[in-house]
Amino acid sequence: MGEFFKGIGKIGYEGRDSANPLAFKYYDPDEVIGGKTMREQLRFALSWWHTMGGDGTDMFGVGTADKTWGESDPAARAKAKVDAAFEIMDKLSIDFFCFHDRDLSPEYGSLAETNAKLDEITDYIKAKQAETGIKCLWGTAKCFDHPRYMHGAGTSPSADVFAYAAAQIKKAIEATVKLGGNGYVFWGGREGYETLLNTNMGLELDNMARLMRMAVEYGRSIGFKGDFYIEPKPKEPTKHQYDFDTATVLGFLRKYGLDKDFRMNIEANHATLAQHTFQHELRVARDNGFFGSIDANQGDPLLGWDTDQFPTNVYDAALCMYEVLKAGGFTNGGLNFDSKARRGSFTPEDIFHSYIAGMDTFALGLRIAQKMIDDGRIDRFVADRYSSWNTGIGKDIIDGKVGFAELEKYALEKGEVTDSLGSGRQEMLESIMNNIMFSM
Ligand code: XLS
Ligand code: NI
Ligand code: NI
Image (cartoon, rainbow, N blue to C red; front, side, top):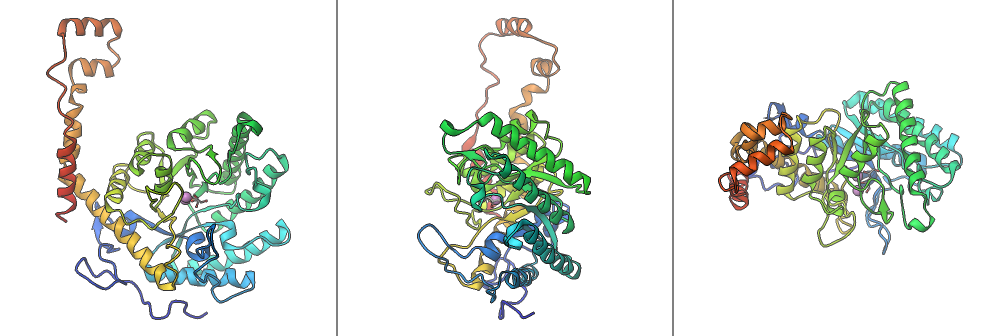
């Protein structure tokens, strides 16, 4: 097996004053921040689909990047992809990868043959994992690209398609367990609708839950102890995706009793599409005890689709990592770069520049988030803002000691509220945030 990226060595940490584009300026894997090393806090993952497969094809043109890895035969290419992926991860000090079944190995003539070929590749990956210590963060099934899934997979009107999807997901869970993955993702690629004129929404959602329940039962029966995730997204490819945003998914999981086994996989660009901030989605997950994993990327506010850009917005990354630290850090999850280099950034070296940009952005985000917490000004302001709930009538409300009658009496006696409103101080807090960020 040859080297794919000749001339690119192991990417080292050189610190913020380095002008070497092939070096980390902020990601120092073994430096301790917040009681853990940066690699333990950040748990970076390579996405097999974008990095190993995505060649820049878009609606208007063919691919620009060569992702054949020197092989035209599909089975040989699948193996070469593994070699190239492990070289990239080793050179970038990335400890995890994420995959769809079909990113690892494509479809062949029959499901049986497809499964057998996937087994060969997962054997090959497993051997590489044993040599390198690189781990699987999560796996998933590509139940959206083949024409059979044109009307959805778990939400297809066809029971035969549902059965086919179940068979595919069964195998993808087996592959995830085999590779030691502690996460299994459901992203509802075509689980939504184009028009309600042809859609039985109630049945489709019941069926989606049935599929997930079967996945949990089967996964647990073969020893999967990790988290199942739903990755919310409001639209694209369907006009309306059922897993619209975190709040919607929470309602679904609770309705169908799936809340014990599922957590959220929050993607930055999907938050943008749902007209939320990335931090909002993370906060909803954290406050409800559903924080799980993250698809790190960023969208473009001028474009209404999933551009999956490598994240470079430090402000967003800092607020993201603040939520992660406040959630107690990652357990089974991590930061998966569901990101692709722009179509014009087509050379092999661009893969490295892209990951360095994304990893340094989140390394900075982690550093700033820890500083926000250590600094304490923002947390103290928020705690103080809600201090009326710690004593007196506020505490009585929280303790359930008073109802409307007592509150009416209180309000009548107290009269107009003048003394406990306080300024929201948004501008002051934004200024503190800048002060924290730029005094690094
Ligand atoms: C697409 C999704 C997809 C999932 C995995 O928008 O982000 O890439 O992460 O199926
Ligand atoms: Ni994603
Ligand atoms: Ni996405």
